[in-house]
Length: 208
Length: 210
Image (tube, rainbow over all chains, first blue to last red; front, side):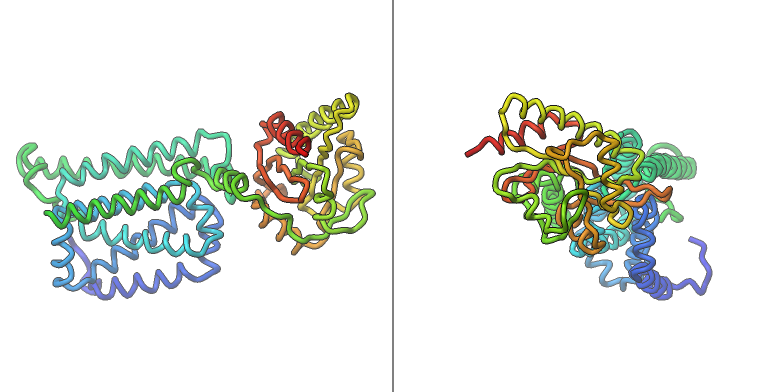
């Protein structure tokens, strides 16, 4: 991974804490949660990003301890998939607005999701990554289509056109992630000669 | 590997448990579905708010609803509405016609209709009066009220879990529905406004009970 020398892990973690603090400020939180699309496609990824940056700064010893419970990144990716699946239940978005416990759980779950992805992704290798994406992306597309096609509002707090827009974005996002990942698989195969790369190689550096 | 498998099982169980909690054991997926289910399981008492309207003096909403004999089908509206309230108005008209027939056949199961405006600052009694006239509302069956105090309005909406969202074009989007309130002034069931027959039958059933 090419990166600027000043971009050390502790600095990224500190930046993540600052971002987390900003996201927690009531005006910004309410602004992001005022729209369904910004709630799910801006706040959610930013929280996961914070989680990833924080996990990145874990000392090597802690990492090793985590890895014992996380062979081939399987537990981490399962945790991330479960978090994403549960957060796609439309009721969560409404509840998060009115119930502080649900809001707190949502934040924690997204931080864990980001951290789990960061810790597990490379260890998973292409095969396990493929399995993870093969579950999460179709689920996202189905949810996206549902948001677009249903004539009723799924969330009481959000407008129908916002819901349709979110649905379109979810489908588009799933397509982009699938394409990007597949391009990376092809690159790994070209580099290491054939499909064996999928089984043997951990994901090439440069992946997240 | 064993530890990973163990953790995975734990995670799967936690995921299942949270999904089951959120969806009331996989019965509902939306907040509206959960609201309807929760109301059916645990009726909600009318909060202590003051209302007024055409030919209705200022009084607690509870006094109007909990008269001990009438079952009321309530809907929430605002008179400037151009969208869902219009179809809701049509639904209420049809229910009014059905209730009139009940009266004519002197099967006078006391079921009444009540439209509550959540736009209290605009929908004062004269505005409501004109709105009612436009919808051919028969004041014996179908009445209109507003909640003058905005704080009271919010309390009522919160209690009945009516969510009103400004749509940015001067209108409001809200989870319009038919709310059945029993003789003790408790919200006991929420029906979709496409389920008017079900709503009125349920209200008649409640009203017909000894």
